[in-house]
Amino acid sequence: MFQKRLVVIAIFMLALIGCSATRKNSIQVKGSDTMVNLVQAWAEKYMQQNPGAFVAVTGGGSGTGLSSLISGTCDIAMSSRNIKEKEIALAQKRGINPNEIMIALDGLAVVVNPANPVDQLTLDQLAAIFTGKIVNWKELGGKDEAIVILSREVNSGTHVYFKEHVLRKNDPDSQEEFAPGALMLSSSQAVADEVAGNSAAIGYYGMGYISAQQKPIAIAKTDKDPYIMPVIENVMKGDYPISRPLFLYTKGVPSGLVESFVNFALSPEGQDIVRVTDFVPLTK
Image (cartoon, rainbow, N blue to C red):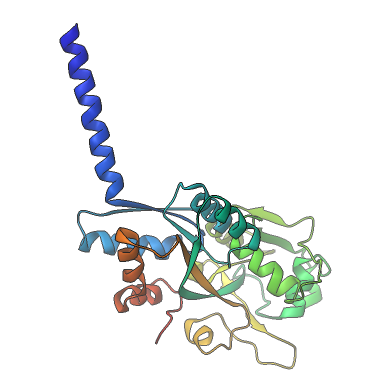
């Protein structure tokens, strides 16, 4: 019996040693659903080149990633928005100084079902749709069909960006909110799937999610400006009206494996992956 206990203890100690070694050579990346595919592609290539390293990537939204960084349950947070002052304050109370690293640019695509004849909108029209002031597609030259509004959930950086830059038009005093009937969906893929199956739906997501099952809308700042499609070249030139930076956040200046992974993301090879995954690299 005593020998069996010794064996169990030995196995337990070996497991602890193995877990410790694994943690030392692994990093956890959490956050923005918009960025998951991009960062997963980085992780796969990085692990191919560094066989002893392990990079785990999970979504959940920008807020979830930043909360995980602050609570110490991840090493890198992915965020499609800037960290908020209250998040910085909470992090600093816990001895963490969030370090912001811009790693790519993104255009937010507004999408409808391919059967919808509407193919261009102004920012004012978008704001009116998503706040519930325009409720039927016939008001925009479409079918006599009630508009189904799709949004990312409130924990999403994409949701925050769209509300601040489209609904509130960058006015810090604006109190505009999404229409009460808007469907809040948990991921960009959920928005894409709903638009693909609903002829009356309209939604938004990072343009890396565009597929043949959704039709992207050309957007104009005003009805006197040109209508611009959400494509890489237009975002790089600064012409597309709904564009934003994408960030990684670390606990202070990165070091070790975290620094190595971030450097890979910013390298020419990492930025090539940015373009391949339909985001916009920081340099041409």
